[in-house]
Structure formats: structure tokens, C-alpha cells
Image (cartoon, rainbow, N blue to C red; front, side, top):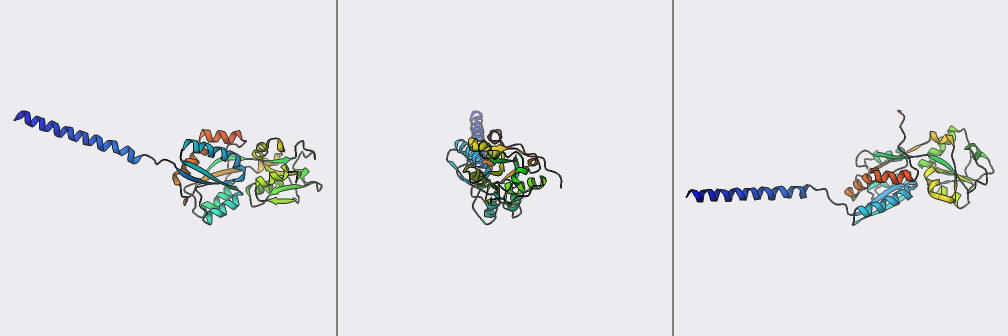
Length: 266
């Protein structure tokens, strides 16, 4: 009788142990973060096109079954689309002001993170045939100069730099974004355009660049945020994490972007 009692107790104890192991092993599976699949839609400033396209390929390689879909353009236009209900998961803007359009409407999921900065440069034709050496040279009425629209971050920064340099000019055209501005110079439809240093670098031999000291007064910080109403929140968080990661930052700095500039207290 004693031996039977011990045997029954041992069996009961074993069953309890097995039950506990089974219960414990199921918890990690239940709490594991969901895998990233499906389409991640990223709205990003035109000046990010080359780098973000590269990051998109990295993202898809890291997350099989995912696809990154980009919409590049002027930050102001993208922000307006987002607050008007355009389905997007991530917004990367070329200035805090355009990001504020989105955050003020409650369309960002959390506080935006500033991930890089960019500085202006004058793009000129290869060889600089017009001998443009300063920002003040752009005021020469014989030159055809193009600028980004004043509502776009590169245009707002250009206006700040022109004011700092006491330069007044009438551009041949205001373009919708920095890519369009650079294209005018590449196609020899303009003698010069004020764009970002990263755009001049990305254009390779198609243009030359002229640095000017007034650009230091108009450095743009770039914020990024997942969006509150995006259809793929897990993908949005993962893409933002890639941008902030050492690998993502290397892609950006290799293209000429810099660390975020200090923000002066208001």
C-alpha cells in the first residue's frame, strides 16, 4: 500500500511538472513581436530619394515577405496629403516645420525623431562656365537661377541664406522640390540652382557644387515618424528603426548627410 501511494504521488508530481513546462513554453510564443510583412508605405522628402531607395532594399532583404513603397516629393505637399487622409506608414520630412503640420493634426504615432541634417550648396553646370563663386554672384541679371518653392524646406532654407547674404534675386522659376530644381541645372535649362549638398554629391559629374558661408545659417534638420493611421504599424516601426540604426546612418552619412544640427532655444 505504501509503495502504491508513493507511485501515485510520483505520477501526479510528474504530471504537474509536465503541465508547468508546457505552460511555460507557450508564453514566449505568445509574447514574441510580430514579424514584419506586407507593404510599408513611406512618404519622404525628395532629397532622400537615393538613400531611402537603398534603405528600402536593405529593409526588404532583412524582412522577407515585405515591400517598401515610396512617395518622394516636396515635404509640404506630402504633409498636406497625410493630414488629408493619404494612406502612409512613415513620414520623413526635410524640416521640423513640415513635420509639425502632421503632428499638430495628431497624425504621428509618437514624437518624431531627428535623424540627419543637410546644408545648402549652389549647383552649377560642369566646369562652372559662368564662374559663379559666391551667393552674391547669383544676383547677376544675366544668370538664369532656379530655386525651390518657398513653401518647400529647401526653398525656405534658400530664402534664409539669401537674406543672410543680403542678396535679392528674381529666379527664372520656383520648382516644386529639390529634385526638380537640380534637374533644371542638369539639363542646362538653368545656370545655377540652390539645392542641398547631398543632391550635388548624388548627381556625380552632371553638376558641380559651389559652397557658400551663408549656408551655415540655413541648415535643415530632418525628422521622421511612424504615422498614427498607417495600415502597417509594425513595418513602420521597423523602418524607422533601420533609419536610426548604425547601418542606416552609414548609408545617409556616406551620401553627405550630417548629424542633426543643434537647435537654438526659442
